[in-house]
Length: 193
Image (cartoon, rainbow, N blue to C red; front, side, top):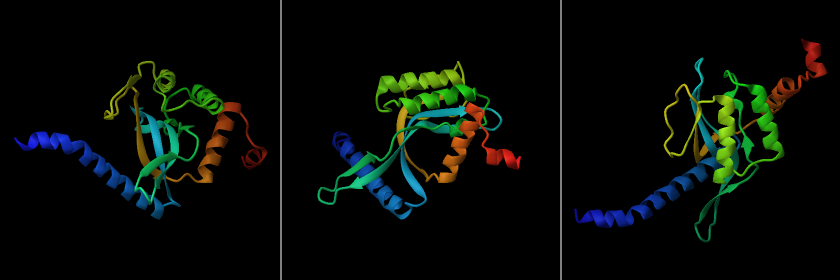
């Protein structure tokens, strides 16, 4: 019992030290696996059991990042290395209005939002939720719920490592968008069909 006041006082510094060690280890891992993986900051996490076996637990917005280490001070920083992207790939194959999501993606590309701005990001998440399901919920909880039949967007952010995107996936994603949104079918593809 006499340790409790002391423990409460040092807990924040112990947690900070643990976070520092985890980030430092992650930085070393990313350096080893640089060609295959990338660090991403995800914002607005969709959690949804979309039917037909689709379980979704992925951020709507992603920002590529790096972990920078200052050798003199020992400081670690997470820095954005590219623009934030609206990531709709996990939603493909679900029974949603893909044309409306395509419109949102185009609008986002033309006028991106700041994912760290609370009100602006929440209005954006709510707009996307209304497209996914009118009963969708926006919640503010750092703990992600279990996927259910109604989509939930958790207004939080998280750092994660994902496989580095290849140019092939971007090519196919852009081709999919062109075919779906504009009805455009490239002549070489038409010739093979």
